Image (cartoon, rainbow, N blue to C red):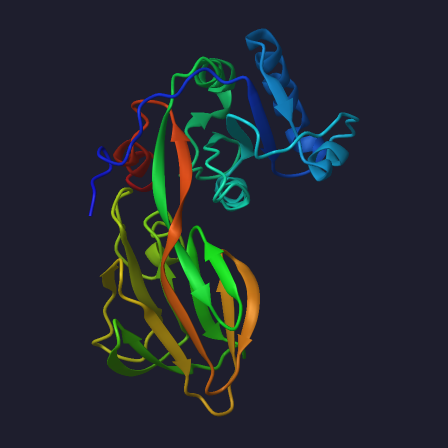
Length: 286
């Protein structure tokens, strides 16, 4: 396993083309986009949007290849960051966020510091942290930046899940579901269910049950190379497979889903000094 410092790349070169990903309605985020556009114009940076983004903001512009950019900038919260990290997964494009959300744990720049923060980024004053992702198999294959959740498909009903890690059976556990989270996802649903926080840079995933009907079901931190397999062993309750907050499949009785640390790493950009622990202190200790 590597440390956060060891996994942080040197500061890249100045930005010349940047993709933009925004959250919310045009009326809410439009002023922020105008501010970003002014910074980009002053820095000589070309902003590129997807057709959907351009349409949302009523813009008519030629939309180039979003993978042929130096950086992606998000205007929003953690949900927008998560969407952008997934969108650019495998392209090598780093993503940096300006926080217009509630917590903004994944973002690096506060809303009132957009001009100074993005100006530094466009000048090349940023570093990139590779973050582990998950590979999920349920008949199809999905990549998860944050987490996989298998939960009861019937509200109010527990589901009995059989599970194994690294090929070793760990029994059956009645619960509301199970979470498998990356380090970046460990501060989300996993944290709210009592799971441990994994510091960015760890090449590991955490497995946590949701409201287990047991005094002995404890979270496990699992290294790369050990697959998690989950089976639905409840005869009359289907399961729901959720990847990064989106339902991707139903887990029928007897069905299984396999999860492991994936081959790709999402590329999180940040300002030097805006470390994991600084974010953790800002978000969770006040």
